[in-house]
Length: 203
Image (cartoon, rainbow, N blue to C red; front, side):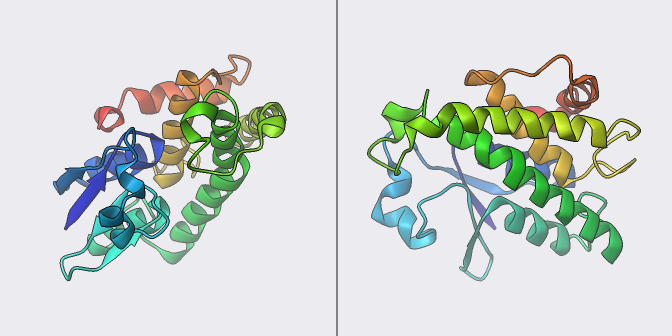
């Protein structure tokens, strides 16, 4: 298999997941800064022009970070990262979906529509007037999650999972683009720091 990698939080999620699985994959760098992901070669791999993309051993390509991670975990016979039992996998997918829709989407679009405007203006349809509200929405849902994890070691209880990886990678990204951690969310801050200390966080 071969991972088409780049800068940004989405590839970070997959790299961190791969590290946690103990895998080593061939990696090909795609330069987002010059728009290489929007050129013909990459569009033939991923017509959405997004990163990352995984090339399978049979030559097929899959994209979307949750799909890539789910596939890799299944190839390993299922681990705690996704869940060894069907109930655990459902729990992981539920929390990953909540984080993706309720936190990741408003956080990243809040950035694209404001600080990232000049970079994305010729690549995506932007809604600058929505930026502040999206950032506020992301922070509200992070505070909601803070309450949900108050008695847990990780988002899925005592099991470190894809949900934690996704949450960490995008919160970490937020701290670099003007959306810092709210120190009042003590459970979130503790979880962030716990994950930040894992060797995979720097993958």
